[in-house]
Image (cartoon, rainbow, N blue to C red; front, side, top):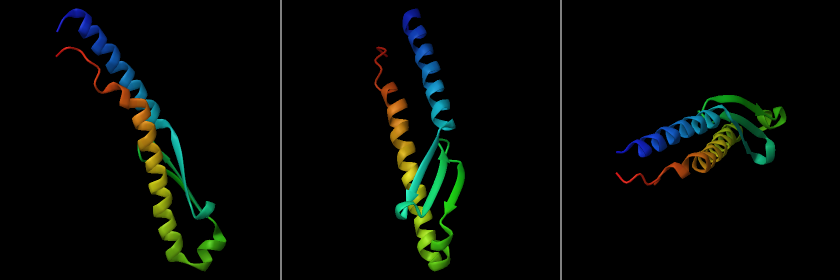
Length: 97
């Protein structure tokens, strides 16, 4: 690997780390049941909050539990999409090695 390739690699590594930090600190919102359940999850997959409509919780606890799972999955899909957007471009960067 020559000096120029090494410099490009270090620059790319720095950009990747910055993108990863941005992703991990971003809060993504997932919803289910038309807003009956709302969750907030950081890009690091840390759950920040879960909000449940109190009227829905009183009516059918099992349904609310299912909606929490759906809302978390919704947030995780958004995290994955943003991850691909931010970090996907770093794959296949030709360095000749």
